[in-house]
Length: 134
Image 1 (cartoon, rainbow, N blue to C red):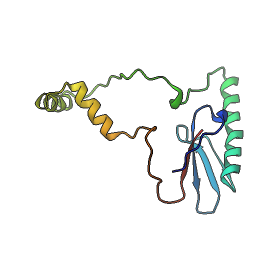
Image 2: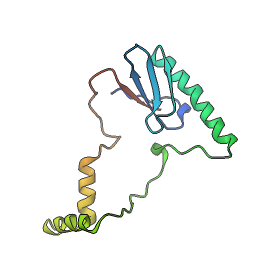
Image 3: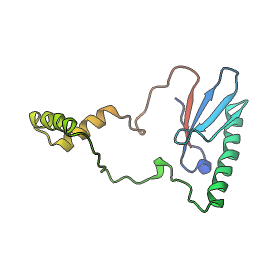
């Protein structure tokens, strides 16, 4: 996976590039895949995505709405609440107690094991897909 920092032209959204079976490049935002553009080269696809992004921003402005903040730019508190079935709640509570952990500690540990943190280096995927942080 190729990542590179681009200018702030995409307001922090992640650009994904894919080479399709016809040899054209598709660029879209990982967080908003409905915003996309094609081009004969990665550079042209990104240029076309820039045109599309400017149109999206104009549409938000015309509707009197704020452009959504990219997840990479949001500040997170480190807390979130979920509601689950009490039977589902019971199983991890018992597992945490058996392991001398709080339920919060067990859930945090399991989330950390199962989620890839963007700052960690990743192996390049096989194929021709490429991903860049905008």
